Length: 390
Image (cartoon, rainbow, N blue to C red; front, side, top):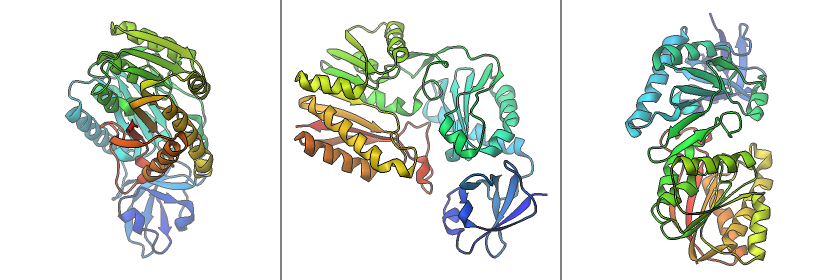
Protein backbone atom coordinates (compact mmCIF):
# COMPACT_ATOMS: atom_id res chain seq x y z
CA UNK A 1 0.00 0.00 0.00
CA UNK A 2 1.54 3.29 -1.10
CA UNK A 3 1.34 6.58 0.73
CA UNK A 4 -1.18 9.04 -0.69
CA UNK A 5 -0.16 12.52 -1.84
CA UNK A 6 -2.83 15.24 -2.16
CA UNK A 7 -2.19 18.17 -4.48
CA UNK A 8 -3.22 21.71 -3.68
CA UNK A 9 -6.25 23.07 -5.50
CA UNK A 10 -5.63 23.67 -9.24
CA UNK A 11 -2.09 22.29 -9.10
CA UNK A 12 -3.12 19.38 -11.34
CA UNK A 13 -3.69 21.52 -14.46
CA UNK A 14 -0.10 21.35 -15.70
CA UNK A 15 0.06 17.64 -14.89
CA UNK A 16 -3.12 16.85 -16.80
CA UNK A 17 -1.63 18.54 -19.88
CA UNK A 18 1.19 15.96 -19.81
CA UNK A 19 3.88 17.37 -17.53
CA UNK A 20 5.37 14.67 -15.31
CA UNK A 21 6.75 16.52 -12.29
CA UNK A 22 5.08 17.45 -9.01
CA UNK A 23 7.00 20.21 -7.26
CA UNK A 24 7.31 20.31 -3.49
CA UNK A 25 5.34 23.58 -3.18
CA UNK A 26 2.33 22.00 -4.96
CA UNK A 27 1.66 19.43 -2.23
CA UNK A 28 -1.20 19.95 0.18
CA UNK A 29 -0.43 16.91 2.31
CA UNK A 30 0.66 13.28 2.48
CA UNK A 31 -1.34 10.48 4.07
CA UNK A 32 0.87 7.63 5.21
CA UNK A 33 4.65 7.30 5.19
CA UNK A 34 6.86 7.62 2.13
CA UNK A 35 10.66 7.47 1.98
CA UNK A 36 12.87 8.76 -0.81
CA UNK A 37 12.52 6.55 -3.88
CA UNK A 38 9.21 5.00 -2.82
CA UNK A 39 6.21 4.79 -5.12
CA UNK A 40 3.50 7.23 -4.07
CA UNK A 41 -0.07 7.64 -5.34
CA UNK A 42 -0.94 11.18 -6.42
CA UNK A 43 -4.45 12.61 -6.03
CA UNK A 44 -5.87 16.00 -6.95
CA UNK A 45 -7.54 18.29 -4.39
CA UNK A 46 -10.89 16.49 -4.81
CA UNK A 47 -9.05 13.22 -4.07
CA UNK A 48 -9.39 11.81 -7.59
CA UNK A 49 -6.46 9.59 -8.51
CA UNK A 50 -4.03 11.22 -10.92
CA UNK A 51 -1.32 8.56 -11.04
CA UNK A 52 1.69 6.96 -9.38
CA UNK A 53 5.24 8.25 -9.25
CA UNK A 54 8.59 8.16 -7.49
CA UNK A 55 8.72 10.31 -4.35
CA UNK A 56 11.68 12.33 -3.11
CA UNK A 57 11.07 14.56 -0.10
CA UNK A 58 14.62 16.00 -0.42
CA UNK A 59 14.18 17.35 -3.94
CA UNK A 60 12.37 20.32 -5.45
CA UNK A 61 10.91 17.73 -7.85
CA UNK A 62 8.96 15.88 -5.16
CA UNK A 63 7.31 13.34 -7.49
CA UNK A 64 8.23 12.08 -10.95
CA UNK A 65 5.05 10.61 -12.43
CA UNK A 66 5.42 7.10 -13.82
CA UNK A 67 1.90 6.25 -14.89
CA UNK A 68 -1.64 7.67 -14.85
CA UNK A 69 -2.87 4.54 -13.09
CA UNK A 70 -1.80 2.63 -10.00
CA UNK A 71 1.57 0.89 -10.27
CA UNK A 72 2.51 -2.15 -8.21
CA UNK A 73 4.97 -4.22 -10.25
CA UNK A 74 7.71 -2.21 -11.95
CA UNK A 75 9.24 -5.02 -14.03
CA UNK A 76 6.48 -5.31 -16.70
CA UNK A 77 6.10 -1.53 -16.81
CA UNK A 78 9.85 -0.92 -17.28
CA UNK A 79 10.11 -3.72 -19.84
CA UNK A 80 7.24 -2.32 -21.92
CA UNK A 81 8.66 1.22 -21.79
CA UNK A 82 12.20 0.21 -22.76
CA UNK A 83 10.94 -1.97 -25.63
CA UNK A 84 8.73 0.87 -26.86
CA UNK A 85 11.71 3.24 -26.76
CA UNK A 86 13.82 0.69 -28.67
CA UNK A 87 11.09 0.35 -31.33
CA UNK A 88 11.09 4.11 -31.92
CA UNK A 89 14.87 4.19 -32.38
CA UNK A 90 14.90 1.25 -34.77
CA UNK A 91 12.09 2.83 -36.79
CA UNK A 92 14.27 5.84 -37.58
CA UNK A 93 17.70 4.21 -37.36
CA UNK A 94 17.16 0.60 -38.52
CA UNK A 95 20.82 0.17 -39.47
CA UNK A 96 22.30 1.41 -36.18
CA UNK A 97 23.36 -0.54 -33.09
CA UNK A 98 24.32 2.53 -31.07
CA UNK A 99 21.99 5.35 -30.01
CA UNK A 100 20.21 6.86 -27.02
CA UNK A 101 17.91 4.03 -26.03
CA UNK A 102 16.03 5.76 -23.19
CA UNK A 103 15.68 9.51 -22.80
CA UNK A 104 14.31 9.92 -19.31
CA UNK A 105 10.87 11.57 -19.04
CA UNK A 106 10.52 11.64 -22.84
CA UNK A 107 10.32 7.83 -22.79
CA UNK A 108 8.28 7.78 -19.58
CA UNK A 109 11.25 6.46 -17.58
CA UNK A 110 11.74 9.53 -15.37
CA UNK A 111 15.29 10.30 -14.34
CA UNK A 112 16.88 7.50 -16.40
CA UNK A 113 19.11 7.87 -19.46
CA UNK A 114 20.43 4.78 -21.24
CA UNK A 115 22.88 5.08 -24.13
CA UNK A 116 23.45 1.91 -26.14
CA UNK A 117 26.92 1.30 -27.61
CA UNK A 118 26.57 -2.05 -29.38
CA UNK A 119 26.22 -4.45 -26.41
CA UNK A 120 27.46 -1.90 -23.88
CA UNK A 121 24.83 0.11 -22.00
CA UNK A 122 25.81 3.30 -20.18
CA UNK A 123 23.32 4.82 -17.77
CA UNK A 124 22.80 8.15 -16.06
CA UNK A 125 20.39 7.95 -13.12
CA UNK A 126 18.91 11.20 -11.82
CA UNK A 127 15.87 9.90 -9.94
CA UNK A 128 15.95 8.44 -6.43
CA UNK A 129 13.23 5.99 -7.43
CA UNK A 130 15.11 4.80 -10.51
CA UNK A 131 18.25 4.38 -8.45
CA UNK A 132 16.34 2.31 -5.89
CA UNK A 133 15.01 0.04 -8.66
CA UNK A 134 18.04 -0.02 -10.96
CA UNK A 135 18.42 -3.79 -10.58
CA UNK A 136 15.12 -4.18 -12.49
CA UNK A 137 16.51 -2.13 -15.39
CA UNK A 138 19.75 -4.14 -15.38
CA UNK A 139 17.82 -7.41 -15.50
CA UNK A 140 15.84 -6.24 -18.54
CA UNK A 141 18.97 -5.07 -20.38
CA UNK A 142 20.65 -8.41 -19.68
CA UNK A 143 17.74 -10.75 -20.42
CA UNK A 144 16.05 -8.88 -23.27
CA UNK A 145 18.88 -6.94 -24.96
CA UNK A 146 21.86 -9.23 -24.42
CA UNK A 147 23.86 -6.61 -22.56
CA UNK A 148 27.51 -7.53 -22.03
CA UNK A 149 28.56 -4.39 -20.16
CA UNK A 150 26.38 -2.14 -17.99
CA UNK A 151 27.75 0.78 -16.00
CA UNK A 152 27.00 4.38 -15.08
CA UNK A 153 28.67 7.63 -16.12
CA UNK A 154 26.82 10.30 -14.15
CA UNK A 155 27.02 14.08 -14.10
CA UNK A 156 27.57 15.05 -10.47
CA UNK A 157 25.42 18.20 -10.62
CA UNK A 158 22.17 16.31 -11.20
CA UNK A 159 22.99 13.54 -8.73
CA UNK A 160 23.62 16.11 -5.99
CA UNK A 161 20.31 17.82 -6.76
CA UNK A 162 18.50 14.52 -6.25
CA UNK A 163 20.46 13.66 -3.09
CA UNK A 164 22.22 10.69 -4.67
CA UNK A 165 25.87 9.61 -4.29
CA UNK A 166 28.14 10.80 -7.09
CA UNK A 167 30.10 7.59 -7.52
CA UNK A 168 29.74 5.52 -10.68
CA UNK A 169 29.13 1.78 -10.65
CA UNK A 170 29.87 -1.17 -12.92
CA UNK A 171 26.91 -3.58 -12.80
CA UNK A 172 28.02 -6.03 -15.49
CA UNK A 173 31.18 -6.68 -17.47
CA UNK A 174 33.75 -3.90 -17.67
CA UNK A 175 34.20 -0.30 -18.77
CA UNK A 176 36.01 -1.14 -22.00
CA UNK A 177 36.19 1.00 -25.13
CA UNK A 178 33.84 0.47 -28.09
CA UNK A 179 33.88 1.30 -31.79
CA UNK A 180 30.49 2.47 -32.98
CA UNK A 181 29.00 3.64 -36.27
CA UNK A 182 26.78 6.67 -36.76
CA UNK A 183 25.60 5.17 -40.04
CA UNK A 184 28.43 6.71 -42.06
CA UNK A 185 31.52 7.14 -39.90
CA UNK A 186 33.06 5.09 -37.11
CA UNK A 187 34.02 6.45 -33.69
CA UNK A 188 36.26 5.09 -30.97
CA UNK A 189 34.49 5.51 -27.63
CA UNK A 190 36.69 5.81 -24.54
CA UNK A 191 34.35 5.68 -21.56
CA UNK A 192 37.09 6.69 -19.13
CA UNK A 193 37.89 10.02 -20.78
CA UNK A 194 34.86 10.76 -23.00
CA UNK A 195 32.30 13.39 -22.03
CA UNK A 196 28.65 12.67 -21.17
CA UNK A 197 28.21 8.88 -21.45
CA UNK A 198 31.06 8.72 -23.97
CA UNK A 199 29.52 10.23 -27.13
CA UNK A 200 27.12 13.02 -28.09
CA UNK A 201 24.30 11.15 -29.81
CA UNK A 202 22.13 14.28 -29.77
CA UNK A 203 24.09 15.93 -32.63
CA UNK A 204 24.11 12.87 -34.87
CA UNK A 205 21.57 14.10 -37.47
CA UNK A 206 23.01 17.61 -37.41
CA UNK A 207 26.48 16.31 -38.28
CA UNK A 208 25.07 14.82 -41.48
CA UNK A 209 23.63 18.22 -42.44
CA UNK A 210 27.17 19.65 -42.54
CA UNK A 211 27.93 17.46 -45.56
CA UNK A 212 25.48 19.48 -47.66
CA UNK A 213 27.75 22.54 -47.88
CA UNK A 214 31.25 21.61 -46.65
CA UNK A 215 32.84 20.62 -50.00
CA UNK A 216 35.96 22.66 -50.90
CA UNK A 217 35.52 24.91 -47.84
CA UNK A 218 37.89 25.72 -45.00
CA UNK A 219 36.43 24.50 -41.71
CA UNK A 220 36.93 25.27 -38.02
CA UNK A 221 35.48 22.66 -35.63
CA UNK A 222 35.65 24.27 -32.17
CA UNK A 223 34.75 22.30 -29.02
CA UNK A 224 35.38 19.43 -31.41
CA UNK A 225 34.98 16.65 -28.81
CA UNK A 226 35.52 13.41 -30.78
CA UNK A 227 35.69 15.29 -34.09
CA UNK A 228 32.22 14.42 -35.41
CA UNK A 229 31.34 17.67 -37.19
CA UNK A 230 34.77 18.16 -38.74
CA UNK A 231 34.97 14.53 -39.84
CA UNK A 232 31.64 14.75 -41.65
CA UNK A 233 32.91 17.93 -43.32
CA UNK A 234 36.09 16.08 -44.38
CA UNK A 235 34.02 13.18 -45.71
CA UNK A 236 32.12 15.69 -47.87
CA UNK A 237 35.39 17.01 -49.36
CA UNK A 238 36.31 20.00 -47.20
CA UNK A 239 39.49 21.81 -48.27
CA UNK A 240 40.83 21.77 -44.69
CA UNK A 241 39.61 21.18 -41.14
CA UNK A 242 41.01 22.70 -37.94
CA UNK A 243 39.99 20.89 -34.73
CA UNK A 244 40.06 22.78 -31.41
CA UNK A 245 39.36 21.44 -27.92
CA UNK A 246 40.75 22.21 -24.47
CA UNK A 247 40.98 18.46 -23.76
CA UNK A 248 44.09 16.67 -25.01
CA UNK A 249 42.18 13.37 -24.69
CA UNK A 250 39.56 14.61 -27.16
CA UNK A 251 42.18 15.90 -29.59
CA UNK A 252 43.98 12.55 -29.51
CA UNK A 253 40.69 10.70 -29.90
CA UNK A 254 39.81 12.88 -32.91
CA UNK A 255 43.12 11.90 -34.53
CA UNK A 256 42.33 8.22 -33.90
CA UNK A 257 38.85 8.62 -35.38
CA UNK A 258 40.25 10.25 -38.53
CA UNK A 259 42.65 7.32 -38.95
CA UNK A 260 39.87 4.84 -38.18
CA UNK A 261 37.85 6.21 -41.11
CA UNK A 262 40.82 6.68 -43.48
CA UNK A 263 39.82 10.29 -44.02
CA UNK A 264 42.11 12.30 -46.26
CA UNK A 265 42.64 16.04 -46.20
CA UNK A 266 44.45 18.89 -44.50
CA UNK A 267 43.93 18.64 -40.75
CA UNK A 268 45.20 20.83 -37.94
CA UNK A 269 44.77 20.12 -34.23
CA UNK A 270 44.81 22.62 -31.38
CA UNK A 271 44.64 21.69 -27.71
CA UNK A 272 43.51 25.10 -26.54
CA UNK A 273 40.75 27.05 -24.83
CA UNK A 274 38.30 27.97 -27.58
CA UNK A 275 37.82 31.58 -26.43
CA UNK A 276 41.58 32.15 -26.44
CA UNK A 277 41.96 30.42 -29.80
CA UNK A 278 39.28 32.64 -31.36
CA UNK A 279 40.98 35.75 -29.96
CA UNK A 280 44.25 34.74 -31.63
CA UNK A 281 42.53 34.05 -34.95
CA UNK A 282 40.77 37.44 -34.81
CA UNK A 283 44.09 39.18 -34.08
CA UNK A 284 45.70 37.34 -37.01
CA UNK A 285 42.72 38.27 -39.25
CA UNK A 286 42.25 34.59 -40.03
CA UNK A 287 39.04 33.59 -41.83
CA UNK A 288 37.23 30.27 -42.31
CA UNK A 289 34.43 29.46 -44.75
CA UNK A 290 32.57 27.55 -42.03
CA UNK A 291 33.01 28.02 -38.28
CA UNK A 292 31.34 25.39 -36.10
CA UNK A 293 30.97 25.86 -32.34
CA UNK A 294 29.33 23.26 -30.08
CA UNK A 295 30.01 24.45 -26.50
CA UNK A 296 29.04 22.69 -23.27
CA UNK A 297 25.99 23.91 -21.34
CA UNK A 298 26.73 27.33 -19.86
CA UNK A 299 23.51 27.36 -17.76
CA UNK A 300 22.51 24.42 -15.58
CA UNK A 301 20.03 26.42 -13.49
CA UNK A 302 17.83 29.52 -13.81
CA UNK A 303 20.28 31.48 -11.68
CA UNK A 304 22.95 31.06 -14.35
CA UNK A 305 20.87 32.32 -17.31
CA UNK A 306 22.21 35.90 -17.30
CA UNK A 307 25.89 34.94 -17.08
CA UNK A 308 25.40 32.09 -19.56
CA UNK A 309 23.70 34.40 -22.09
CA UNK A 310 26.65 36.78 -21.96
CA UNK A 311 29.01 33.84 -22.45
CA UNK A 312 27.11 32.57 -25.49
CA UNK A 313 26.96 36.08 -26.95
CA UNK A 314 30.72 36.61 -26.51
CA UNK A 315 31.46 33.20 -28.04
CA UNK A 316 29.21 33.71 -31.06
CA UNK A 317 30.47 37.25 -31.63
CA UNK A 318 34.06 36.03 -31.78
CA UNK A 319 33.12 33.12 -34.03
CA UNK A 320 31.29 35.46 -36.41
CA UNK A 321 34.38 37.68 -36.64
CA UNK A 322 36.40 34.89 -38.29
CA UNK A 323 33.74 33.74 -40.76
CA UNK A 324 34.71 34.61 -44.34
CA UNK A 325 32.35 36.70 -46.47
CA UNK A 326 29.36 34.61 -47.53
CA UNK A 327 30.53 31.92 -45.14
CA UNK A 328 28.58 30.09 -42.43
CA UNK A 329 28.43 29.92 -38.66
CA UNK A 330 27.17 26.60 -37.30
CA UNK A 331 26.28 27.18 -33.67
CA UNK A 332 24.63 25.23 -30.86
CA UNK A 333 23.43 25.57 -27.30
CA UNK A 334 22.59 22.59 -25.11
CA UNK A 335 21.42 24.70 -22.15
CA UNK A 336 17.75 23.93 -21.51
CA UNK A 337 17.35 27.25 -19.68
CA UNK A 338 18.34 29.16 -22.84
CA UNK A 339 15.20 28.64 -24.94
CA UNK A 340 14.88 29.05 -28.68
CA UNK A 341 13.79 32.71 -28.63
CA UNK A 342 16.55 33.60 -26.14
CA UNK A 343 19.08 31.81 -28.33
CA UNK A 344 18.00 33.84 -31.36
CA UNK A 345 18.26 37.06 -29.33
CA UNK A 346 21.82 36.10 -28.38
CA UNK A 347 22.70 35.47 -32.03
CA UNK A 348 21.18 38.78 -33.13
CA UNK A 349 23.12 40.69 -30.44
CA UNK A 350 26.32 38.83 -31.34
CA UNK A 351 25.94 39.66 -35.05
CA UNK A 352 25.27 43.32 -34.28
CA UNK A 353 28.40 43.55 -32.14
CA UNK A 354 30.43 41.68 -34.78
CA UNK A 355 29.03 44.10 -37.40
CA UNK A 356 27.76 41.39 -39.74
CA UNK A 357 24.39 40.34 -41.12
CA UNK A 358 23.14 36.83 -40.44
CA UNK A 359 20.59 34.76 -42.33
CA UNK A 360 19.15 31.61 -40.74
CA UNK A 361 19.25 28.80 -43.30
CA UNK A 362 18.63 25.83 -41.00
CA UNK A 363 17.45 25.22 -37.46
CA UNK A 364 17.11 21.93 -35.63
CA UNK A 365 17.15 20.28 -32.24
CA UNK A 366 18.44 16.96 -30.97
CA UNK A 367 18.53 13.80 -33.07
CA UNK A 368 15.57 11.47 -33.46
CA UNK A 369 16.68 9.28 -30.55
CA UNK A 370 15.89 12.26 -28.29
CA UNK A 371 12.08 12.55 -28.49
CA UNK A 372 10.41 15.42 -26.65
CA UNK A 373 7.22 15.85 -24.67
CA UNK A 374 5.44 19.00 -25.90
CA UNK A 375 4.00 19.48 -22.40
CA UNK A 376 7.50 19.37 -20.86
CA UNK A 377 9.84 22.12 -22.11
CA UNK A 378 12.53 20.47 -19.98
CA UNK A 379 12.77 17.64 -22.55
CA UNK A 380 13.74 20.09 -25.31
CA UNK A 381 17.23 21.45 -24.75
CA UNK A 382 19.42 21.46 -27.88
CA UNK A 383 19.34 24.36 -30.33
CA UNK A 384 21.30 23.94 -33.58
CA UNK A 385 21.46 26.79 -36.09
CA UNK A 386 23.24 27.28 -39.42
CA UNK A 387 23.68 30.96 -40.25
CA UNK A 388 24.88 32.47 -43.51
CA UNK A 389 27.12 35.42 -42.69
CA UNK A 390 27.29 38.51 -44.89
